[in-house]
Length: 173
Image 1 (cartoon, rainbow, N blue to C red):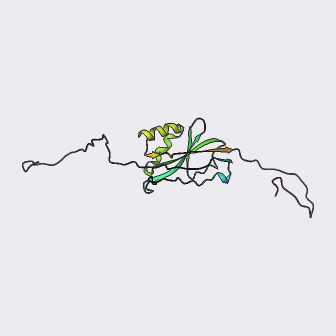
Image 2 (image 1 turned 90 degrees about the vertical axis):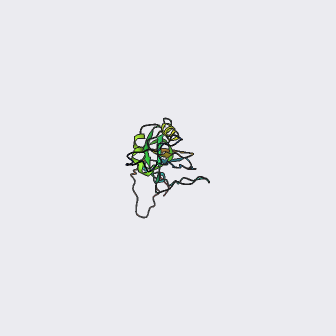
Image 3 (image 1 turned 60 degrees about the horizontal axis):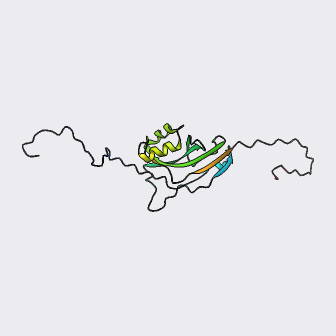
């Protein structure tokens, strides 16, 4: 460039030597869940879990302004993803055996998660690991299992109680 060069810069591009075509960073961190396996019945409040991932230094939680955390519910055996839930709240999951994994993801790409419903957790893991997923995300270092049984049916008793008598219910109360 010299003073004889006149005109306007009309277009330009920046090519990175490492092959990256973007300056957008993807820095989610799934952490570790360290959660025990759980068992309960459909509708059971004990399945409304409150699990927070842990981060072993030097690993840290991603910036909450840019990243969110949810839980992937997949069928045990097939690994088919059936839902993404917060908490995780498993009280409304149909009876069955499940694997629950956390998922740290870029908040502005939340809509892309739904494309993975019906695919396998192993496919999602493969795509996240290889950078080919539809969103920026990271699974935790571990998952846990959940067994959800059918709801407990109500008990109907037909009995007569006289004034002054005591009654002990089948559950002992």
